[in-house]
Image 1: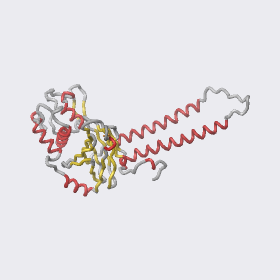
Image 2: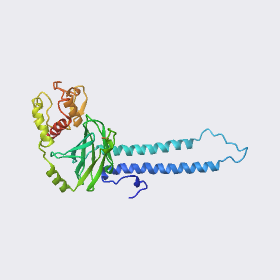
Image 3: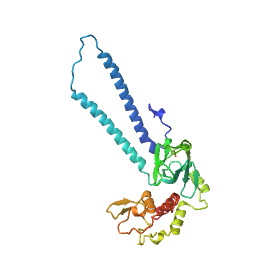
Length: 313
Ligand code: CUA
């Protein structure tokens, strides 16, 4: 369906994420156009109608017009409320990743995007995805702030050193879409480009198989090896049995009670913090005995350990 401001938008290749954004974009532009025309026409009309016609042409003194004042307050308020509600529901949609999303890790660093797949495949500046399936991109940065932007899917998110952020989309066309870095990150910021490459689902599986299982194994295998090397299992069981620290089994996605009375949902950022700086949040009933791993594990190692913990359901 063609709309007046379509020319301002790139092609929509992920309707599930782009449609709400585009709808609001068109609404704001169309309302703005109507207001612009209305105000301009009224301005010209009044300028002509109330032009001073003679020397003794006096302007009447008017203090109030309640009907007019209420109208010009309430109408913009209603428009703003519509825009707010629409924007908020669109934001919730972009945050609510479908449960069956295929997960890919993307790490920004000056000035490239490193891409890691669950079977150990790795690419640089190319994100390979299957068509017609939701894809969750987990973002992290090795150095400074970057921002991951795919205009065709209307998704954009800051890529922040020291924490995980994410976007999701569902590409409905095979082919390529441009990825930009949209946070100024130094000399070659504008060259920090990459592509999403969308395959037919079977073709994607084949691509993964050919490129998968590097020399060091999948992220989950590497994470499991790290857990053994670092001695995590001394205090954290992987089968749910009680030890000195919470078990890894069923940990991801669960709600933990903390010793300060608050509770927290165990997600990637909580696990990351608990590895880097375990003292920050102590689970109720346990002691603060774990050493901080800050500087001992790099970002990729922390991510791999988390990927391993996520498999222990
Ligand atoms: Cu990375 Cu700009």
